[in-house]
Image (cartoon, rainbow, N blue to C red; front, side, top):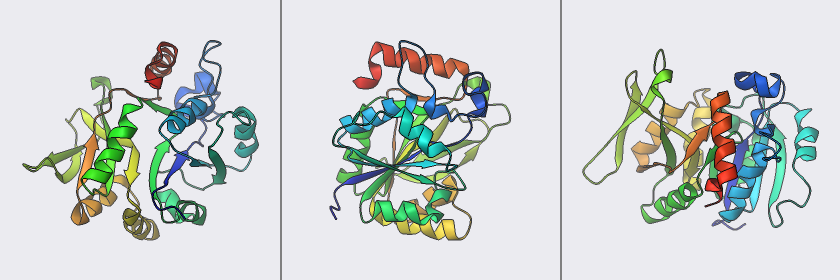
Length: 251
């Protein structure tokens, strides 16, 4: 197996309850077709981004078996030549708890791997920056970071971090006041898989404990994307549609 190949785990299941106006609280957000002018489902645009970044192997993780044929129908056969994508179903869609499922580790093999969601959109530059950091600094993980709107602060917990004088992340934690949060996509060197699996077996595969463990063994790099939209509101959907139509996501 080619150890230099990057494997991508794309979490796409769920019922789309946060934007039920678009999904009917049944269809995953990643299958939303935003408008007649943006005719493909959201996940197709992210697959296109990954293909442009040179990714050849993608595992789409869904919540239920009945979702598999729907995704296969929605993603046109032959739309991404040179990319192999397969499907797996998992009882949980938390980005790290899914690693308790053997399909995930079998798919990754001995490769570096990226974990992301099918309903987020980010500028192509973030993948290049993350891959560069992973190689240059011998880091275990690079994470996307974006600013949260003030309207989401009330009652929310945000992820914060501090750096040493070399720019390395040395501590992470929670805050009620910070306006930034670490978010997928997460890019890992293969050696991080052991840490994730240990947490998954202990039923504690949450973001902060895992990233804290990784800081203890290697540096953590945080990348601020030029554009990242986490689709949780109707306004987010409009922002994604606008970005696609303007061509920002293809730059």
